[in-house]
Length: 254
Image 1: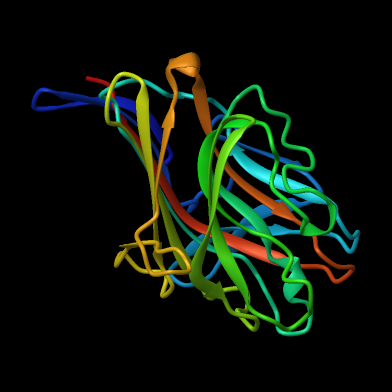
Image 2: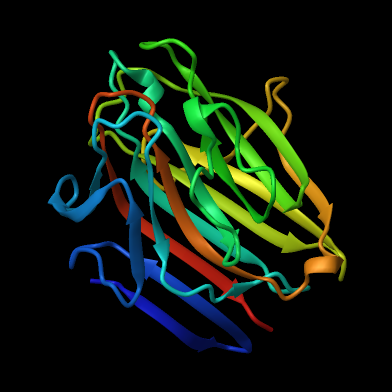
């Protein structure tokens, strides 16, 4: 079980880390589960995963988030987040795959973080992540999207990667988000994806095949604390299940 929030010294690099493979289930001192879901350990490939199950209430939402918000927007202190997850889409009700995986400031209320019927992402938060909205028709594929946000100043980019309908619970993808300050006031956000759920992460591209990189001024929110968030929004009246196999977030502090 890797459920460590720790500070470690590697040479002259001081870093802060949160990582978990959920072999011991949901550890309450590390993670919180909220909203319309039940969370429990579930034996899947490989080994145990965290399984979340939604009810049959359309537009209900739920999330698993880090209990602490130890990651901070700071110059020269990059943050790298990776997660291996299954969003639990099925061919009959593809709209169930409304989710967000990323980093969000601790002050943001996560209720309706994705608006009802998967219409849009929350329009006011600090952080960045990868998300998917309702596709509009059951059984159709839907694109992954990337978001970075400083308050209401947002960059939202549709990728050229579709999360195909028929992706059953237990079929994993791997997502990555990297935040790195280019200057004391300018932050870069880049986004990564492995559709096979492995470690072969490649930078996500937009619909024109260009690498996605968001650049934004964070000088007004420097020092804002961020937490890891895996948010799910029910998109139909069919119960859905999803799994989180592994998550790791590391920030260099100096």
